[in-house]
Image (tube, rainbow over all chains, first blue to last red; front, top):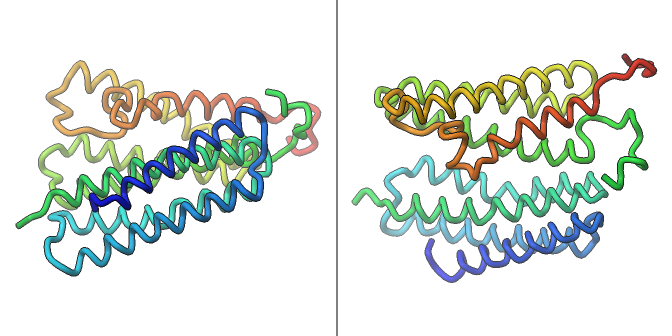
Length: 121
Length: 144
């Protein structure tokens, strides 16, 4: 959970967040590229979640497995939901939705790391 | 706001900035409810008041989300009531958690004015109420 993949996800999300917030500030609706970037980020997050799930089956489990699983489900579902809402909103607010989503992703990843680091061995 | 001129007056509550609010309220509905569920199911005895407040906050966020999503006169009313309770809640719990820390040994979404959530819980009801106020039924509207 602490590998380079998490770091890459967090950095990608933050860079995209800055981009989307800028787009929103400039009164731009999400473009095709913006939505595509959100899909790519979703894929990156999905890979991260799959790696974490595989990790559950070999070796140390977090002591709070239920919470961990809840966060994993939330994390994998979150970006697609935000991208869907943003697609419904072809205004600057659509860009703001994507920007907020990209700010929440690092929080979710950090929480996952936090929960994963407490193992009940 | 530059886009207010192009936005129809009778546009739904859950579009534009309303859709952003929908997402943010949804996030808080989920996080507050999930937090309460974990707290109540695993260690309820440690801080019953705080955990019940977490659950209550989750319900308030949930109903605000539903109100925004439903829209119309009824949805607006649901959202208005929810956001008002939310504002009172975050101010009251924020003050109490600082003044009487003994009663709040564990945090809720609203503790210390939502400092654990980047003070978003403190700002959110103001934005929500402003948005709902902007969508008040006007005398000329057929729907009012």
